[in-house]
Length: 322
Image 1 (spheres, one colour):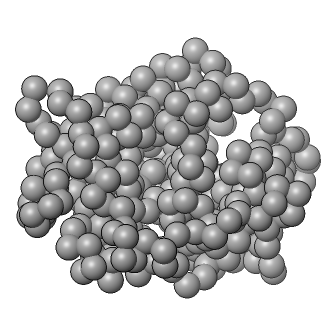
Image 2: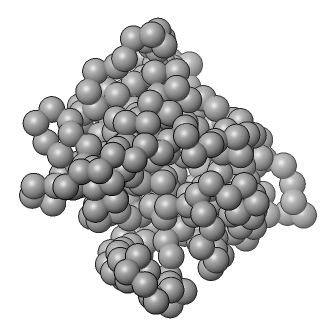
């Protein structure tokens, strides 16, 4: 497969580059303000007109330990010069997405994933609303992004969570990155809901497990979606936890099925075996599943770019020539 050089064409041109460059991140010692939904720092529809090219979104879905597959997908996209204009992530996808958006390379993501220990992210605290406190997840993510808030990450990042009282979708794009991720990964009954301001938030997968529609609403022309959800047919139901998983899997499967119809490219790693989130061998196998699934979709990605008729001077980021 030929290497790709053209995807740098998706970055802002010099005449608008200065206006779109993120500010310097806050010092690591200072905790950013609470996460919130603020004005978009980039008008992607305007950027499309200025750059005469399609806007690319990478959508990373929920799926627990299967989230390591996102790293494998990112590796393949990076190797072929495909860099998104923005990322939308739910649950596990918000973890990989936010750390990548901070400027880490795919290789650095892989190293971070393999070195993560249970004590880094897990804190048991019995409560009427859950048994895990997500504060360690928040702190861990903030450490990886050097306490950079969402609105100052190198790639614009949108984190999807569910507002608990009314069950509404919330899309965080500013403020405390780790806090937004904590909200997005807070599986009901397992994690204590994340409290931000006066509201409580839980797993974004309850309302949008693969948030394609959010990417469209933001102005994406080409949506590359990564679906890592467990298929109900492969879920063990012999115990209470298995039944809980099956209930969630069925709900998310049908929600995602509808949104995925509106993606240009859907990458679905083959992850049938349930790997434990802290199993190193399982992490490597899951990342490899992401690599293999992404490689199978490279020609389809190329076709999506071709449909948008790049103007002269903007090369298509992927060539299917061997």
